[in-house]
Length: 175
Image 1: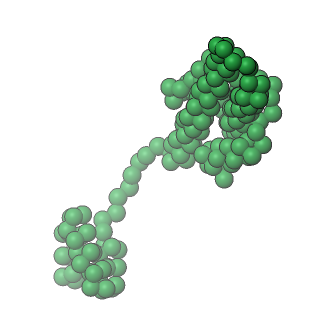
Image 2: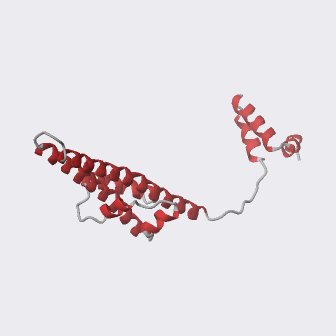
Image 3: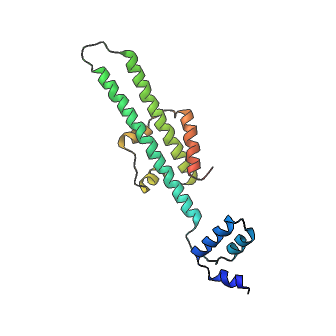
């Protein structure tokens, strides 16, 4: 055993990092390699990393879904409220065009909600998870209005559905 080997064996983690940084700053590749190669080896016991990765991916899917759907529900409700205000205005003629725009905007919100929900439930089915149970597992649940709107028989907004599906696949670790 050489003097260098004896010296290297006495270095603790902090001292070894200081020595490696010093060797790297001098561009002393041989010394850097020796210091790194002689670092003590350790064996670790841990839960399966794939299990944790998959669990965290599923949690992120559920949280993203709740964070996407509930604001769209709020938008839908606010558009309906605006329509109600428009209908009950005092004194003026009913603005049919404004009412039609509000109805169209409310319908767009429902199509967006359906796109998010369909992307989420499809991805959940692909990986064997129950969508409502997954939401509950992260402490989230859809509001009663969101539950009603996700059940409506409407076509999901196509571009948003494609985008949300790609995001869900990515969050699920499938892409």
